[in-house]
Length: 280
Image (cartoon, rainbow, N blue to C red; front, side):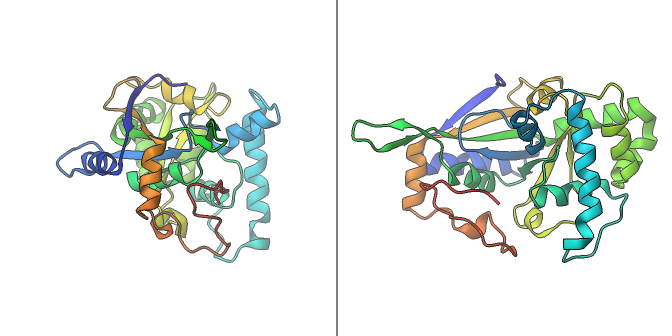
């Protein structure tokens, strides 16, 4: 587990004050956020699936390649929208993530409030009190400095292929993604902030983006900790939201479902932050 700066939120007013700090237009730092039900390291869906089925090392990129190939091949059978260009790798992987396929993309949001919603929506039970009532872990929100990631991205791309690769990446070219994430041998341990040129509905409504590890044979945590400065408060933070704060927000109706969930074709799950729910 990453040993980084931690901050605990006890009530709604403190959460609002922290959001104002993060979104202050006079602050040059651009933060991105991910909510977790409890204090735990962020993991991609690909990482979780490989842990479940004991797939390790070189088997992980092989699985990723197979999943991407099969998704592209079968997408036209089920798609309700225009099929993207086969070379638009970032959009393809974002679609895979959208439909629940395991990928190296990890969901983040530009909105601290939206990340907080997902942290609070599905509480993690920590035990029972003397009366048998459930008690819950503090929810957690990871905050990462996107500008810090961008600086590392630019240095790495110039090292790999000079300014040409930077230009390709700015145009979201599939060639750039392949060169950085699939052709490096050995893979580079790094984290890139990525987004397709075209947004699907959920990305748009949830103000979303993805953080993408360079080496999927190791954890997202190992990729992040390979970056210089990851221990610094101005680059990575962990915000813990006390369970008492959750009760206050629920009783006051602070988080309507429209904040974090778009109206999708599939029926959404429960919005209660006291009842466990499966995220779509």
